[in-house]
Amino acid sequence: MSDERLRVKLVTYGYEEKTVLTWEREDLLARYAEVMTAEARPKVGPVAADSEVKKMRLELKRQKLEFEMRQAEAETIERERQIELEKQKLEFKAQKAKSERVKRDRQGEKQDVLKRERLAFERHEKEKQLELEKQRIELKNMKAESKKQKWMAEKALKKVQSEKEKTRQNDGAVSAKKYADAIRKCIVPMGLDQIDAVAFFQRAEKLFVSYGIPKELQANLIGPYLNQNAKQIWARLSPEVTSVYDDVKGAILREMKLSAAAYLQRFNTCVKTDDETYCHMPQNCAVC
Image (cartoon, rainbow, N blue to C red; front, side):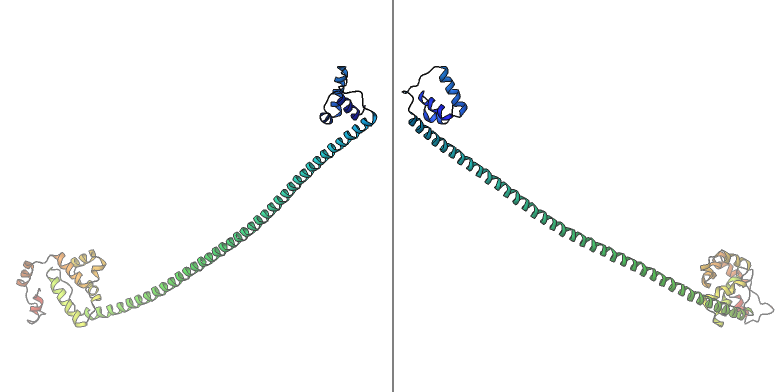
């Protein structure tokens, strides 16, 4: 039995037409089976004529068609909505992909800029380091050259000083020999008596003045003419003292401890020798 026939029969058994039109075939068969099981009778008169049945069938078809059209339209709208949603999703994905691509491009450009800046900075630092290294090497060379020049200057100065010292020593030796030869025949060696030291120094000083002997040579010139005691005192003195005549004289006189009593004794015992004249005798007896 067709769906239309089932709907007509169910309507004749008391079901509302609007409700029946919404049922599917399974629902129609289930309701019709219930009616047959209950042995119900139609609530309306005898079955309508074929023309009425045809009209009802047409109306049912029309209503079904309208329902199917509305359903198809709703499905179409739903499909269009789904298509629009899918389109929007695709557009969103495309926009997102574009945005990400632009972002990646920008990040890539930014990375390129940063990379270029980093390379430029590293190149600048390397050039700076090279320049500093160059300056350090130049400074080192300058220091080495300066040190070399200083060493050469010091060497030249030492050479000049050495030559001057050698010349001075040679000149001093010549001068010392000249003055030593000059006073050798005039100076009288220091006697063994301590009092003789004073007279010795007085005679020596007179010779220094007479021959114009420089002070730096005076101390060395009297050395050979000292008595044994004075020479021992000389040997205990430092080179700084033995190079100065006044220091040597003072040291010897202090070590001999000459006093007023010693001077008086010298004066009282002073006599004229055979080789002295009365004019020279007072000079030899002088103790101060």
